[in-house]
Figure 1 (cartoon, rainbow, N blue to C red):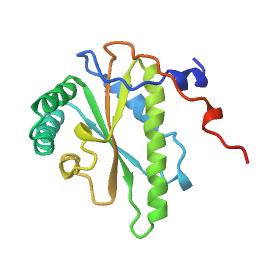
Figure 2: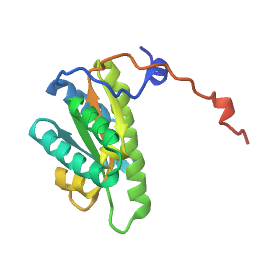
Figure 3: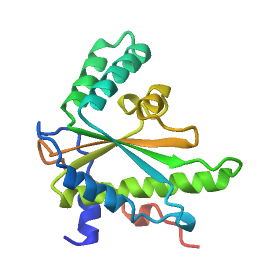
Figure 4: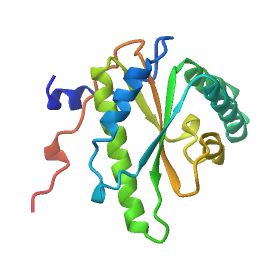
Length: 185
């Protein structure tokens, strides 16, 4: 498959088969991420692989978060937790914060986003599906996730990545053409 096809076929996969992702494939996915472009080769990303007992702790933290955030929506809470329970692998991705250097810290976030995208593109080659979560069940902005991963203060969570073997093929999407989003000066 060429790069253009890979880009066009990349989809958010939210439903997975109940199969564990092999450590060798996880390693390849993480290796793909490390080839992302990054300012001054700072390589500002760090990956926290969550499975097994750590995933059970994540589920407890997610339940607490969702119950606090949506106390009147038990169905939403239950549906979100089922998605997490059925996801075999979670990877939390952080970016380095450089104290006193807001611009470089922001550049690091962009680079880390590129690392996540590299993982996303490579996942299909490994037969995996992936979705990048930031809100809700992703706990990106919640202190519980920082506690769960034991992240030092100089890290910012950029995304929680759900990974697994797709249960079904994602539906194709339609995008605006570049001509609709481009101004030539």
